[in-house]
Amino acid sequence: MADLVVLGFADKEKAEAVLRLSKELSRQELLDLEDAALAWRTMDGKIHVSQTFSTTATGAVGGALWGSLFGLLFLMPVFGAAVGAATGAVAGKLSDVGINDAFVKEIAGTLEPGRAAVFALVRRSTPDRVRDAVRPFNPTVIRTSLTKDREEELIEALQPK
Image (tube, one colour):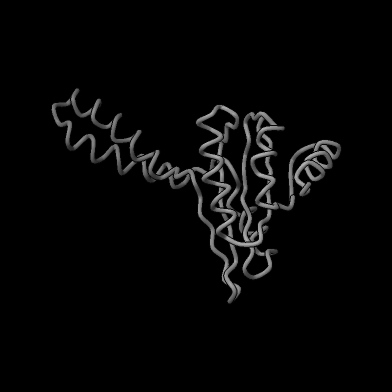
């Protein structure tokens, strides 16, 4: 089961840097994310959300593949791919996997203007290495699905040394 961790940052740039870092940690096999999102509030109070996993695009690609295969059976591969891509995109748009969009918007609504948050649904990680890599960005723990003890351990580990 994946654990949800929501970290707050002083600005959008730091949050974006942590998302880029998460991709590097993933390449090093230190972090495996099921989903991630970035939310920030501009100085005028507007809330913005950026998802890193697009169910629409994934659905379209899968639909195009299956549509092509069925199209080949009926000697219309291009038509089958087009119909499959459209169907897959709609199915992807309607499915909500990973981090709940309403939850992201709810937390984003609590951010102070100029601040940002990174939402990470973590399948597995090497906790000490990930915490050491993230600590220089001075994150604050906003919310987690961890046990109380593990959450307190995370908060303490992310404190500047």
